[in-house]
Length: 142
Image (cartoon, helix red, strand yellow):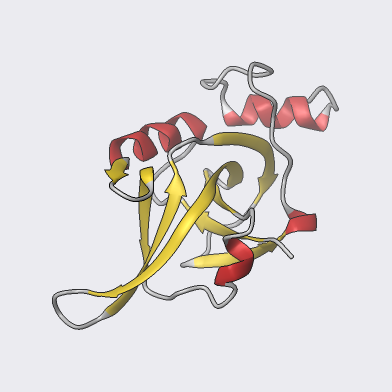
């Protein structure tokens, strides 16, 4: 069964800001190709379920705004002897139908049945304000 993670994009208020932030953090791994590394202290216990089609859903400005697919999850120890987890996600950000979400710390699991659907490419402009997108969704136009 596929599972997803929900993570707060700290300091980012909308989809455009998230896209810019992820582009600035993109690296090319010799084995995995282009990825965006996301560091976290704890390793998800449902690692196998995340790596079988799971995505990292991003919360920005009080809404779930986008997702990036998982490529790998690695554990390591830093120079000071502390364990950490590296979530390797795709550099391709997909916009999703906004769903309200309050701020939280760390990450949360998101069941496959509870995840917001993708918005098809070209349906909305990437720089459309989140409040306008939310209103269009409330009206049933998206």
